[in-house]
Image (cartoon, rainbow, N blue to C red; front, side, top):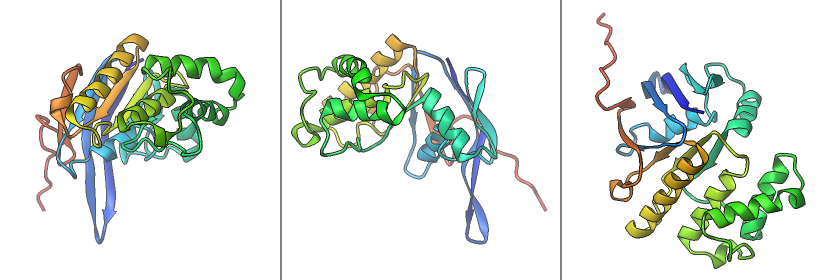
Length: 233
């Protein structure tokens, strides 16, 4: 299913005034494709990703997966969590792996949190580790894996729920260019193979040779979008 951002705006209180972190963003990420979201620090990339993930309700606008609205103004945390569980996989900037669990156990724990038994999810976990090239590393702890391998475990973990949408936040920030490009190749390849609409936040255009589209966010707006009208007192 496609990911649709429809006129998404996010406004935060800021002292006596407000700060518009995301300003009327509309974009569709088709199923099976990867769109890279670029922009300077403070442009609103992480804020937009948080709205797309249902972690933060927008001030206005909607996030849809296919025809299903998964986030909108007033969306409650419980409803957003259910929608996220059903539709969205998340990969954070830092892999956030548990140091005491093996690569395989990281994925099994995700299944347990979704209400499955670890034993029933083991085959799927092994298939996903193989899909990210880590079939021989399933019994290794995070400290025994390289930075790129830890990021691959995080990607496999995000796919345990067979999501329609994959949201990836700065997956190459701690990697050199070659390893970063390999991670992006992996993400785009999995998106195409599995029909997942993928939005990938990045600061490094040198690693993005395999993405299907690039969009730039500046001051909360997509580059090229018309400026919001200013009210004149």
